[in-house]
Amino acid sequence: MSADTTHEPRRVLPRFPELDTEPFWEATKEHQLRYQFCEQCETVIFYPRAHCTKCTNTDLTWRTSSGEGAIYTYSVIRRSQHPSFMDMVPYVIAWVDLDETFRMLTHIVDVDPDDPESGLTIGARVQVHWIDRGQVSLPAFHLA
Ligand SMILES: [Zn+2]
View 1 (cartoon, rainbow, N blue to C red):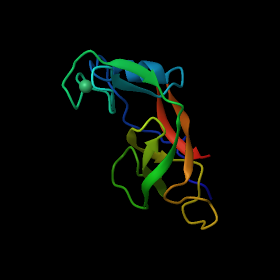
View 2: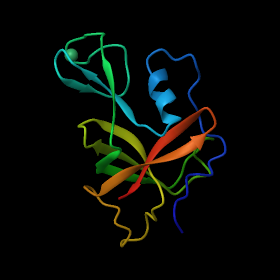
View 3: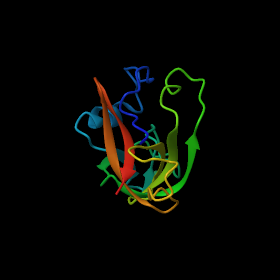
């Protein structure tokens, strides 16, 4: 049985207006995974925020990720008391290193965490997978 996360009924969603992350969420409607870049010191910034994490420059540009990366590490959640996630177990959360050099916490979907042949492993290549939720889409990943 695969961990299908497309049926989570009570998922927490962002509330708008949201000054720092709203452009990120706007782009998700077009299934674009965006991140910020500081032209001043050439630093990649993720998660979205108002200033550069290296030089504090507030004039950041937005770039669109290829949505491709590799699993840095992961964990299988088998029990959850949170209403947004309790119906999803077992599911896989992971830190994914995107090819544009930022790391994000996310879900790995469409994989059976109990199948040793599934390909779920540290270093596995992944591709962004969009979960549409009305006014936004949530970025998750599946094995590439
Ligand atoms: Zn900077």
